[in-house]
Image (cartoon, rainbow, N blue to C red; front, side, top):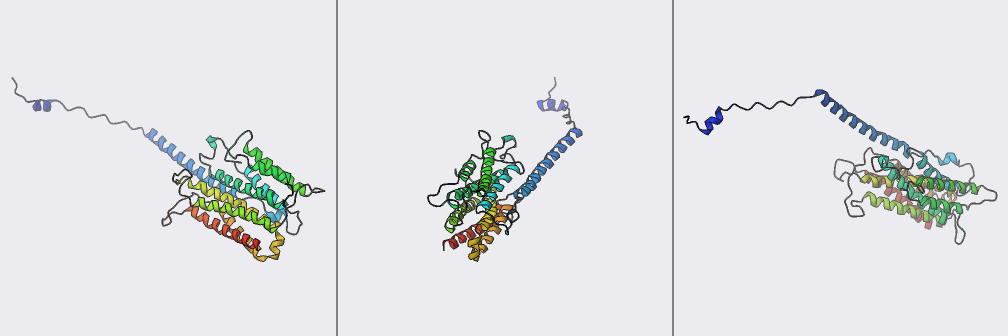
Length: 330
């Protein structure tokens, strides 16, 4: 009988065959790399396309001095109303149109949210600008409201996210139409629209409304938590950036319109004209500021903080508008 031990028996058994090597598929691997490269290139192309498309869209192709040459007389109110109409019409007809209510598959919350939030800021600023125009700049004490301005103000109050019954675009086009009708009424014989009254005391109300909006923008540009207490994430800071920029866009063009409408007070008080120019300049820079990526770097970090950069212009404009209010009150 054999006296072999279990260890010896185990050693005597043949070794298991080596595991078969996984077959390589060079063609498949090349296809995966190619598809990944195409996706990255397409993603980068979309980002660059949206960036440069936004830069082009941000510029309103409307020059007040060309539309209303300084040597040509105008009816008080027509420059103000026309500029408001041009601002909204550009958002409805330029680029991809009105973005906040777009369908989710190609809507603002997927990738192209920058212009959507910018348009929300534009709408908010236009609402306030139209409200003051209706309530104060064209109305004194017990005088009646201008009917076209009532309708325009109501149209601009429509929900910007509604896509039917009625769609936001439908109501905002109606608002533009009523602003155009207001201008036409100024030139009717006899006039059917109420002229802008050019009183300093009423202009103060507009400066107050704009100052409040810029204060809201300033607070959002320094915000660290959302309204429900959650921290502001790096991928959402651009929402506050572009909404604040929408405010600046409206005020940049409307300040130029107001400067033309109130040429008489500015002529008798040159310091006001200077302050208007000093407010228009930072508003224009804020309206056109377009980083490729809105970064939220630390104050002592190596990366930029886009919100703080924008706030430098917002705060400068707000201070100049506050100074305009003080001059108007004297």
